[in-house]
Image (tube, rainbow, N blue to C red; front, side):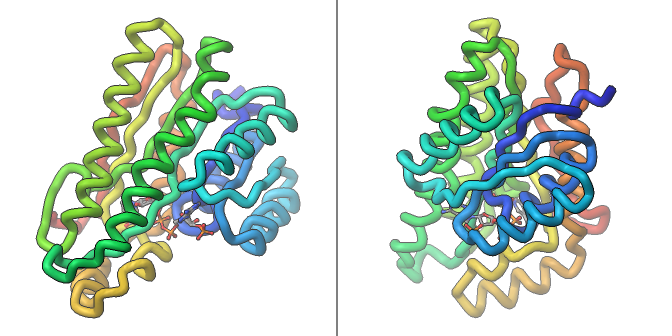
Length: 248
Ligand SMILES: NC(=O)c1ccc[n+]([C@@H]2O[C@H](COP(=O)([O-])OP(=O)(O)OC[C@H]3O[C@@H](n4cnc5c(N)ncnc54)[C@H](OP(=O)(O)O)[C@@H]3O)[C@@H](O)[C@H]2O)c1
């Protein structure tokens, strides 16, 4: 039996891109999905698709930047399935622009979704994993969590933060012997709706050029499945996954 079968997996940002592809991949391997994002029509459609192939999925409309909504998501998952085995902290936005553009509202949003959203999910879900002495937290950082480039400063800052949170969580859980595995996934250019969150025209044109080598979101879904299906005493901690022909 695969180490994914019957696991309860909460995925934030499940309504498109990497989150959606991961939900389908894990459902096909027998996981029970809890889908979260803001767009209900997309979540409902994904739930229907998963159920059509014989998979199990429930969903809850959730804004990850709301601590209360994240707590409600955790409570719903625990009520419906009795446990949470895996948290995929995937929701994210990337409104890139040069600092001189002073898009302070976009900085706030990136910090709220990409950093606070990850922390709120950890706060809401990891305590139940500690109690059961079992669990897996998978955080979506980025190549932008390893490299800094002009125009990406705040986005890179949020993704460096995700990498730091992953490693800090890993060390603290290992120190306390909670058996909680932590995986930091850093994708390169992946085809998704993420570019739509960049409003600055110059930056967007540059990104579209950079994304010509992009690979499908299903590639990251398989990477996430690979991390989960390892034996419980193995934690894949860090994965950088680029298109073969991506340079930076
Ligand atoms: N695509 C890439 O090249 C790439 C590379 C490296 C890292 N990543 C990371 O991978 C993750 C997934 O991105 P993606 O490429 O799959 O982009 P995407 O297609 O735009 O998906 C982003 C997801 O996040 C959700 N989301 C955004 N704000 C939210 C909020 N406040 N509350 C709840 N959900 C929210 C969106 O759903 P709703 O709008 O319905 O809420 C959507 O489901 C992100 O963390 C991104 O930074 C992507």
